Amino acid sequence: MSLITIIWSMSASACFTLAGVHFLVWSRNRLDLANLFFSLLASGTAAWTLCELWMMRAETPAEFATVLKWGHVAIWLLIVSLVGFVRIYLKAGRPWLLWAVCGLRTLLLVPNFLVGQNLNYLMVTRLGHMRLLGESVAIGAGVPNPWILLGQVDLVILIIFVIDATVTTWRRGERHRALTIGGSILFFTLVSTSQSLLVFYGIIRVPYVSTVSFLGLVAVMGYELSSETIRAAELNRRLQESEAGLHEIEERMRLAVEATGFGIWIRDLARNEIWATDKCRALFGFTETERLELDRILQRVHPEDRNTVRLMLEKATHGDGYEAEYRLVLPSGAVRWISSRSHVEFNGAGEPILVRGVSHDITARREAELETQNLRREIAHAGRVSMMGQLASALAHEINQPLGAILRNAEAAELFMQHESPDLDEVRAILADIRKDDQRAGNVIGRMRGLLKRQDLDKRPVKVSELVGEVASLVGPEAAARHVSLEFSVPDSLPAVFGDPVHLQQVLLNLIVNGMDALDEANQEDRRVSVTAALDGPTNVEIGVSDSGQGIPPDKLTCIFDPFFTTKANGLGMGLPISREIIQAHHGRLLAENRNEGGASFRFTLPIAEESVTK
Image (cartoon, rainbow, N blue to C red; front, side, top):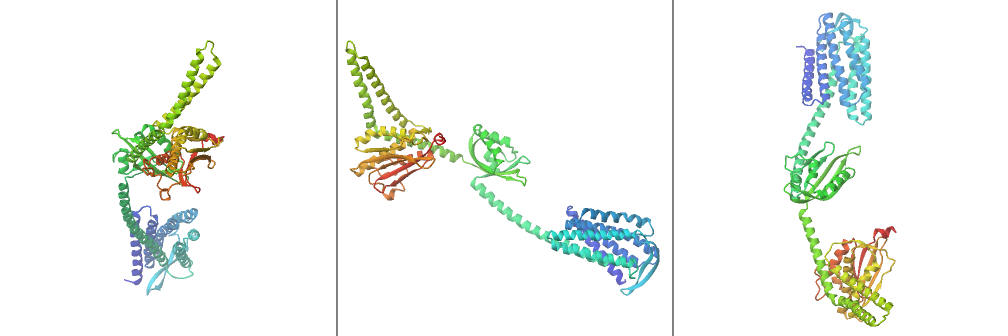
């Protein structure tokens, strides 16, 4: 077997092998059109290689012409697949140039079969021979076919298309791909075209050997695609490792979520679908197979909370999400408290597409909070009863005064009525005094009943001067009995505060009584308790109670508000903790400190009523 036959046959076999391999690659992934076009390109190159070998072995002009005719079919396949590969792989090249190359080359198949013996020659008139690789090969010559000019124009358009695609790829920043693919295609196409033209016009007398250029083109393109395949395999390996790592992370997250009792859910707004973990389904009383729908979930929400939750969900899609606590009524009739938190994701157009969230059961916490609130009310009530016990004698004394005045006025009126012509004006004056004393006694009893009554906060605007005045009237007799001087500095112009007057009276009463107790323990000669009130910024009023005693031991300042901590021999240690709870429930703060001039000072703030701020 001759060397030419071996080389050209091996080249064709290599091309067919590459074509088969890349066709299988494409068949596994039909979207990878680059491998399909390369498979067709390699097939066309193999077919043209066999045609070249046959032409070099041709024995007659007619045989040479026939082989060249069918060789143009291989060239058509080669050129069409080449432009397709450039367009797909480089993602560049003007479409009209692509269609011009493919359309013109397809059109030229008509004169190739119908005009003359083939597209190159109307008639192959003779065969010449020359020595190549040590043996004689045929060289055709004949009458040129005028249609060959369109074939040459098609090759020029092909070169322009490749140049345009290469420049676009280079400008896009993909310079390696532009040089390896675009540059090699351009180089080998120019070499092949030049050699074919020189042979056709008889400038050089050699056979058609475009196979050399096409093999170089196939080698470069095959290497680049193989590199892509290798990189894809490496990426697939890394992806598998990442998936394994991701699975491990998911398992850890699942264990962490199950340990914390959280249920995770995702709501797809576009498809109106809800996905939830098994824990989340159990929280809402759904089985693992039940379809989750928003309406069904809302039906599980407590009727009193349903509208609030629905409005909250609607508002959440226009913001970043929501945080909420609400009740569920399970199919068994049990009521469960749920806390949910979510985050909304938006697409590039700013439209909400996903809502991701977590939910967990807070029933135990809410029950504990309710129990704590009830206990706090019980303790506050006990504190009020205890304090009123301490003030019982003073209150009795204050009530006895109006009752005694009523009795004396009644006796005086009875004496006046015994006269034959009583002075009616005096009687009317006595009756007016009786009415005032009765009202005063009623007010004292009303204030005492309010302090003793167990009730929740009933907030409303309260004038500070009236609040302090009522407490002063309650504690005044006790202060007189203890020989304590009460000083009040409360401007009448202070704005009203927003709070529950009974609870605030309890706080103020507790602080004043504590101040008097401190004076009793210190045996001070200067026995003074001062109550002041002033603005604390634009939104608060500060009320202070200070005494002239020895103050609070520095080591006990940090724990005087702790429950059951007391410095009194018979104290419960609940007055100050309850007072702080009441002030905090009014969105204020209660502070304690020692004064530089001696004694302790307690200050608490209260928010100004909105109507006072408006004025």
